[in-house]
Amino acid sequence: MPVITKPDGTRLWMRRTTAGDLATWFGWLLGVALTVVCFQFISEQTIWAFVWDAPRQAADLLNRSVPPRWDYANELWKPMWDTINIATLGTLLAILIAAPTAFLAAHNTTPSRALVRPIALFIIVASRSVNSLIWALILVIILGPGMLAGILAIGLRSIGFIGKLLYEAIEEIDPTQVEAVRATGASGAQVLGWGIVPQIAPAFAGITVFRWDINIREATVLGLVGAGGIGLQLQASIGRLQWEQVSMILLLIFATVIVSEWVSARVRHAII
Amino acid sequence: MTTATLSFDARAAARAWRPPPLIESVWLRYAVYLAALLYLVVGLGSIEVNWTRAAEGIERGARFLAAFFPPDFVSQWYDIQEGILESLTMTVVSTVFGVILSVPFAFGAARNIAPLPIYLFCRSVIAISRTFQEVLIAILFVAMFGFGPLAGMITLAFATIGFLGKLLAEDIEDIDSSQAEAVRATGASWFQLLAWGIQPQVLPRFIGLTAYRFDINFRESAVLGLVGAGGIGDTLNSSLDRYEFGTSAAVLLIIIAIVLACEYASGWIRRAVQ
Image (cartoon, rainbow over all chains, first blue to last red; front, side, top):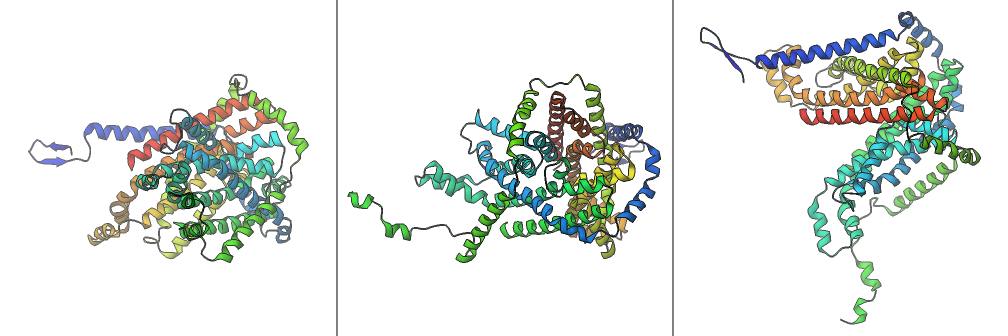
């Protein structure tokens, strides 16, 4: 703790040294300056007349979207079912690829630290750093519009998520249990099945259900780029400025996401 | 040792220990398996694939992959630069505003310090913000504020409120109440309680979450351009529309590089404060 001794001999406790004070102050100054500069850049790209008009626009939007067109819901059950399918099948696809990748990436189970581990880590990083909507955009160009592109997009994005959390879970297992199984003369596959898998199974189930919950959210917007699901209806309704249909869709999405979050929370509580 | 002992003994195998099944009741276990199988059949059956279209796409896919060797940074450099600057500025400003706004919401959403009406109001704002994907919110804000990065910035700030508000509120609910009690016992006012009893307990996690959210905000800013809310997604989308795959590849590589840099930096900050 820095202490200043005043001329009259009393000692004054300070939180930081003078240099520390200056550094903190400059840090804040820099942060504020950066924010202001960034805001100015955004401001230059903005037509402020539209922004001042926003309250009126918002009121207009609200006016046109209330009440929601309830009977439109009948046309939405199928797209909503598609959306849930995209999320679920995409998650399953991701599990199929992510589980082996995680074992290859964890330093205690990988067959080769020099060769296989970097490749597995690269797969995980590449998958994680591209948003599922961007994956969908690319896949729609290659596969054409439809659910398949959506499922693959969700799957490709989830590999990295599940893979990363799973390999971290594998690296944190208790090695003594693995050693005990190995000491009985178990083969490599038996060590995996009896020593490692039971230890990570709860984490694995939790991670998977958590990602499924996120994927339901993500799947609702994939239709905007043509990758199937309820986003297609949303895109069409916005294009025709039918806001009372948009509000119906948003209500349905809200209900679905709340339910999926509840299911995921229940399952995770039951497991962990 | 005789060969008889080595041969397979069915009775011994039946008595051998097996791990207990996950679901105790037999019929429920098979009902779950059957339901899962049924769902898989129905779900996979609902995918309609246009195979001729997919076959045509292979050539396009090959061209797209080929465009990565080498990616074309030069010909649309102006657009790329503009998009990245928009994304980065959106990220910075939205994180700052979002964090500042999320603090009161977090205090309001913590049951141990907020009265019930405020608690319910803050929780519902957080629930709405968390339920809708950023892109959906961006559509509404674009309709209100017009095209451009301002709509994207407001979207991300709103999403930040939901994310930080919820996690911070949970952290505040989990604080050591004896410390807050001790501060309260000195006769501290409500604001003094926040500043001396609660803030020091949640600050490290708050900084960590802020760094994490900065990282997420950049990732999301890369796709908001698809609905006209500015940023690099706009550049990516238009290059894909024009079949300029070389530019798309360049944009993707830049996004990945910045995401990795953000992730590394945010991980470093989180390790440093926790």
